[in-house]
Amino acid sequence: MKTSPLAAVAAVLFSAGAAIAAEQTATLAVDNMYCDACPYIVKQSLAKVSGVKGVVVSFAKKTATVAYDDQKTTLAALMAATTNAGYPSHIVR
Image (cartoon, rainbow, N blue to C red; front, top):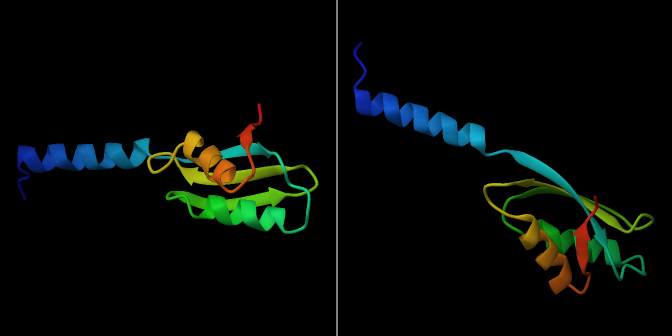
């Protein structure tokens, strides 16, 4: 079976795009979490962001760990989501 050059190029580009996209994990320090309902609100605000795969919020540590697709969202969008919900955040270094 003979493959056309166009089909070969398309296959390479498609597989390269899939390889470039990657699931990332980021931990955000989250301000203003003072009550038991706060982690739920932070989690829900992050879960609504397109590309977010999972969220774990720690009330004790005041952090949110987010697994996300870096082709669908950015760290800035994640921080904006918590900030818009009343919980400013920044990346933990």
